[in-house]
Length: 222
Image (cartoon, rainbow, N blue to C red; front, top):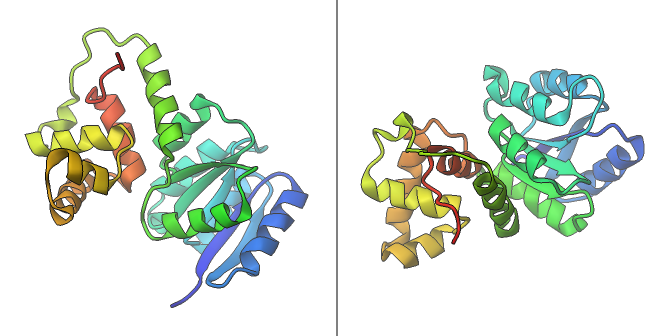
């Protein structure tokens, strides 16, 4: 199989070099370029069409979240996945990145092996969203006043069972956990997830998490 092609975007040259060294010395991965600004990341992504972009949040000439939005919305990079890297473990960055279309979120002090694993996960089309991140997102979302919130009209085509699955995805459950909780087979859960992706025009599981929050399916805790 061809290697996973990765674009590294970070305003710190030392970090870019470190990431590039790690990626190029890992079997099955290769870098296709470096970007020091958000604008460079967008331009390089459109030219190289990488499988994954490692995207810093705070960069000059367009931050990483805005760059992510441009990459995810452009037809020529529709299949490119963005993995957000930041030193700041803040809810606003997580939520903003996911809304922009990112498929994952990691801190820069993540172990090298975990970073490599994350690249492979998102390149395969899955979302990388740790349960701890999901809990923080829920906590942040439920702190905001949303009086009388009702499910969004975009859920009109979603069946009751699919809503149940979407709610559990929003709470951070894996397919295995959803299957156990709803007493469904793994194949059936995967079918429901696939239909949700299609009906909600979602790129991946991370976008389903956002949809669960924004539609009101995820209820405030206790």
